[in-house]
Length: 128
Image 1 (spheres, rainbow, N blue to C red):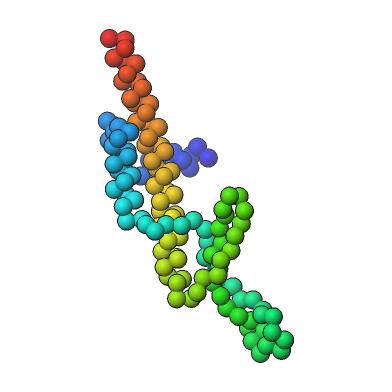
Image 2 (cartoon, rainbow, N blue to C red):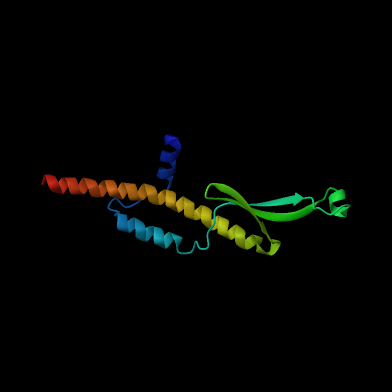
């Protein structure tokens, strides 16, 4: 796992050496400005039978198509029907959610580096 993380950090844009926690906050706010609305979960297309007896679609094996949003809330899985007209909008939310999640991972690393740098600078000043 270390190799993957190290490779990822090396392939991303280099961060300034003097980046502070406030700089990271400003960077994150700029990066996330256009990522709303955002959601986590997955959008699935499914075909399922209905409850009507002798339904031609069900009898033919075609069944009834629908989209479902799956996610987790308070540790419990949920599913919600998504009308076909709303699928592009919901998909955009999910794309934004994944982009936001990736930015948060980057922010964690950058924040920690900035905190360590600030701690080291404070320790150096205390020695002087």
